[in-house]
Length: 203
Image 1 (cartoon, helix red, strand yellow):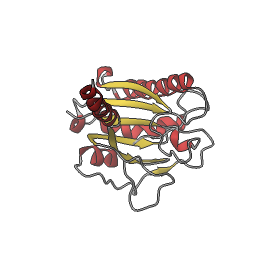
Image 2 (cartoon, rainbow, N blue to C red; image 1 turned 180 degrees about the vertical axis):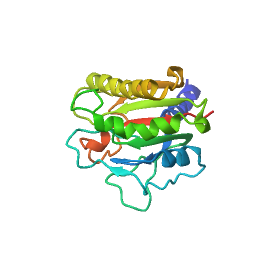
Image 3 (cartoon, rainbow, N blue to C red; image 1 turned 90 degrees about the horizontal axis):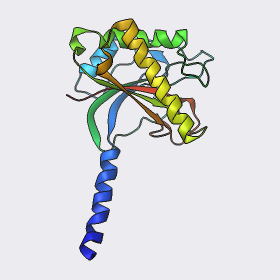
């Protein structure tokens, strides 16, 4: 019995570490990256990606927004990127994809944000790759509601990429994360927590 009690905490700690594996991310915020920026990040071995250049700022939109996942350049982010612990070999693109308030309906602006993502994922360079599309919310609302809303938003993104860019449905799985893995845990109601992450899965 004593032996079992000694190894139980080790098992619990190990399980917690495995469940906290979090893909390295590149966060473009409300700017629309170019197709080349998305490709450069997903194909690179580095955590860093140049998020400057020809990206388009959508910060003046009045719609509520969501985020997709990478590390920014030397500019100061509005929120602290999540530190993977332990680090994962997976990568993710993060942006604040625009949806109607309290809805899983993509706005026209949200579709424009997704176009360079779709163009990049449809290239020969990323052919045969698999992705996980994660929906995230802030802490406002019940757990069950947020899980379902985040799942439907992830599904909306998947459906757009499939219908507009011909990506195979079985190459993308969706997951509603709800309040888990807040982008800014110091401000849990911040709009930066209402996001979608597109994660490139490791081979």
